[in-house]
Structure formats: structure tokens, C-alpha cells
Image: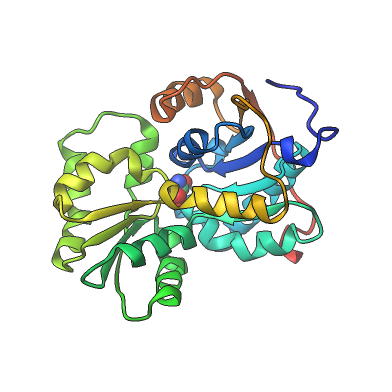
Length: 287
Ligand code: DGL
């Protein structure tokens, strides 16, 4: 519900904030809603500035700090960066920026990288992600940090998130684009593929079909629940609510477009969506 006073409640009953450039992060929110039903959530879709995958690392860092300030002011007890591009560019900066607050931050890169390292048997892992994420090298670094013997094949997929965000049904041209991206992973003989952009699980069936059924697909949502539980547990912030927590949405772009697409992707009713304008953060990059 809009207007729920959040700051005068015990910290553990305040919302977990989740953000993405668009509807992709709903694949992460979906996992969290299913696994942590007692928690309250506030999701922000920065649809006015979609796509993040084409932005520079510096732009993404500025956006991430603006959004973090907005969500902390809205009473968040934890920040989940449900966007590969923003996690890759801005996680260390966000950790630093929020260090003086009681709000911890969790990103999607490391949990997915760790799952992939656990899953691979032949030591060959593929990463499909936005150009910004691939350029950052964040997945390759996180995988090497878990096991430097794992060989990583990274494929930048500039058209995939915009295709999914458009909501247009897959046509032959789109299928050809997806086939081009997956062909590189097939050639590299990966047995595990990270869907390194939170939009991509929405194309999981076609990706699985093209990669072959023996390839294990790893999504950001699969790894994030444990990280969120650990981050909250470490600070005594897991909700003690019985029954279901509320969830609501902030959106910087068109609310009705977000509702239409979001309802399809979340597979649950969306309820309240509030249009918000983000204030530029003074000294965002100085943090
Ligand atoms: N869902 C996002 C990600 O995980 C971003 C897609 C985009 O905005 O380009 O990278």
C-alpha cells in the first residue's frame, strides 16, 4: 500500500528494496516472494532509463546511488540490486555509499557465479549478459574468485533485454538473434550457462532448447535468496511477521506499461504502482 509509514516500524518489519532497470528484476522478486513470504518488498523499476545494458559504468554508478538514496529514504532495511548491469558496475560503490547507514546491499553477480561453479562438471561455464556487464568483467572475476580453473565464455547480448522488455512475442528474427548468442556457448561446449541479466530467465525455455537439455541454466534469482537471508540474519533483521507481507512498486516510466508487462512476468498481481521521479544525488560518485 502507498503511504504505509515505514520509518517508525521496527527495522526488521521494514521492506526489502529491490531494483532493476525494468521488469527483469521481477524474476528475482518472484523468487524472494515465494521463498520469504513474510517479508515486505518495495520494487523499483527504472524504466524511464531502460536499457542499462548500453550505459557506461559511470552512468550506472550514478543511477544506482540515486536509486539507493530513494529506497533508503522510503524505509528499506536491505537493498537488492536485481540487475546484472548495475550490480557489475556499482556494487562496491553502493557498499561504500551505504556504509554509514544500517542498510546492507546484495547484488546478483557473486551468488550466480558461485552456483555455476558448484554446478559445472566439465569446468566450462558460459555467461550471457548485457554489453555493460560483459565489459565490466564482473562474472569472469567472480568465477575465477571461486575457482580459477573454470573456463568462462562470455557473450554480450545487446538485443536480448530490449526484446524481452518490449513484450513483443518472439518472431523468427528474434529467434535468429537468440540462436546467434547461444551458438557461441554451444561451440565452447559449456555444461552450465549463467543467465547474467535478470531479464533472461523470461526466455529460459528457448535458451534451454537451443543450448540443449544437458546444459544447466543458472539464474540470478536462484542464488539470491540465501544471500538475502544471510544479510538480514547477520543484522537480526529477518521479519517475524506471520502471514504474507505487502509488496508494492515504484516506477520511473509509464505505470500502465509496467503493470501490463509486470503482471505477466511476476505471475502474481502487481497491486500498487507509484510513479516516482528520482532526485539526482549530490556527490554520488564521490562516495
Ligand atoms: N535486467 C538488467 C540486467 O540484469 C538490465 C537490462 C538492461 O536494462 O539493459 O542487466
